[in-house]
Image (spheres, rainbow, N blue to C red):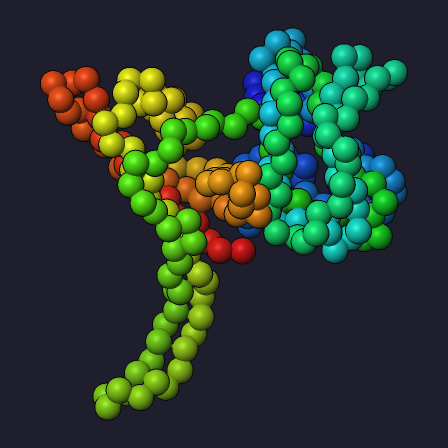
Length: 247
């Protein structure tokens, strides 16, 4: 949704050196930041002349200080540009930490006007990545996987006799491999559509929203897309390999 051709994204205020358009480039190295603590603050989306396609059932945020700033966050829609109507899609809340947020809600249908609402902040809020739209839900993986697989990326110096001399810690990398064996054409079409739209960009991964709601990761797929046919072309074995930096 955000960044769609013909759409406009604006913010109530923006600090120097920041840009509200940075929130949907899926990069953690850029951000939007409010210029002050005025309440409420809005990031507003106008879908322009093609509003019928702008539906949403989830909100995702990473690289923020909403909890530290004590702010409330919510998402609203309107039929008249918020002139007389502003409907909350879920009750506004303050997250318990500054970790990634993934909030699901009932899809209210296609709307031209949407906005992120931020209020009661004690410090200017910043957001590295903030998007709302429709989640893609896959089938259950047919092979086991570890959603918390990690590898420390570091330069480790060891003496010739095996003594540890020093460690230069760089970051911790998450990885996850999902396998769907004997996948049908419907699942393959869903995965291929996602791949064609997303490419190598970061995206949010939630492996078990109901039982592990805090496990929200920003990850990227491997560069190779290969899911071979089997059983005479009736099925495929699909493998999705993901990597990302641990918060």
